[in-house]
Image (cartoon, rainbow, N blue to C red; front, top):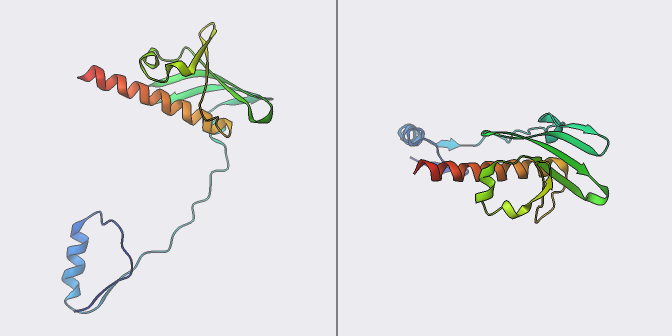
Length: 145
């Protein structure tokens, strides 16, 4: 019996390997991988895909998480200076280490300061949504204990 391995990867099921070894006693088995499949990049930007509306250099929409949605405004200023605002951010953020990044602008609006400025509007939205989700998950786990 000869077994030729042409590549290695994580096997999700040991049953597959067992079947291959069973068949191997009858001759040579070649384990090959299918050629990679090209997945075309989405043509629509994240902000548009998630319902944000653009009016000139300003965007209006919601930061969406599985815990809820929060109204937002984004001002795309000159030279990559993008200002992200959120209306009435969840109170759970106050208990997170990120709360100092939220600057009160009045009337329930907070500007979100990011240490590393996002490259574009879409990545800023994603970053804020992840931050909110993370803070709410930590809060839920603390309350479940």
